[in-house]
Length: 383
Image (cartoon, rainbow, N blue to C red; front, top):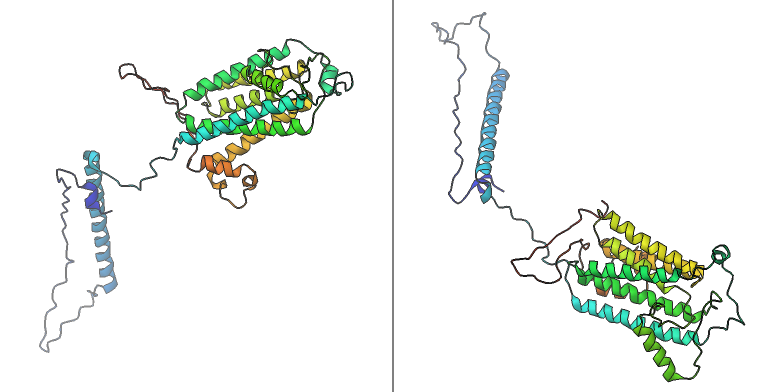
């Protein structure tokens, strides 16, 4: 960019550079006296000035003059920019206007996917319940945790209360997120996928009840109407023992309560500022204590909890690694792209061109007199 373009403004004020240049010709020796034959007289005491010395002196003066002009020009440019910096405009290439599109219709598709798998889970539980062996025929399998820790009847109630608190906290946090459409479809997709995995595992392997204390509803066998009513009752009560809707057995491998406790905590921590460490620790305590209380209440085998935790954390981390590292999406050496759900991932994340920032805003527009928005953006994910 030319220097004149940088300093030109609306008032056409241009810095004026003045330089007083004085050249000094070297003093020439007086002409020697002429003699009769026309040749000058030679003096041994006055040797001629070498030509290279004369040229070196001229170069030194030219470099000194050039340095003077450059210094004055830089000073004038700096003064002009300081006085008229409001009028200096540097054009840069414009980036894509919207790198985080909402695309609520994709969020709706992910929600229907999660809803279908949750409904399908209740159907599979009803089917598996008919296959659970009787306690008198098949006693509980040996479990090392049960050998050392006796059952506490109220422990499973603590698990469900902690789960409800975590889900409620995450729902409120999600409502106040600015990019709730993107985060919402990630959450719905992971919920649907994890419960679909659960349908597969508890259908192909039916474990006996983990404790003699468990009371299972009577089997209906070919009573299709009764099974439908059980499905509706299970859905209406949210599949919780607190509501009295979960009286069926067989949904042991793996633990659905572990999935919800772990997944809620992971989303709460991932989409909240790093300085809210006290909030993260509180949610971690709710999640960890809830998972431990599942075992203390002898409601699941230890293997149910371990597999539930492992599948939930790995699926969450795999998905978010691909979502936050854009170079992995089309890299030939990316083995994460070989997952079966990579097609669904590309559908949901195709237009998300950058990492989702942690920004909060009011979920509804308030009147201008009382509108106040709080913006909380992380400088980096690894603060």
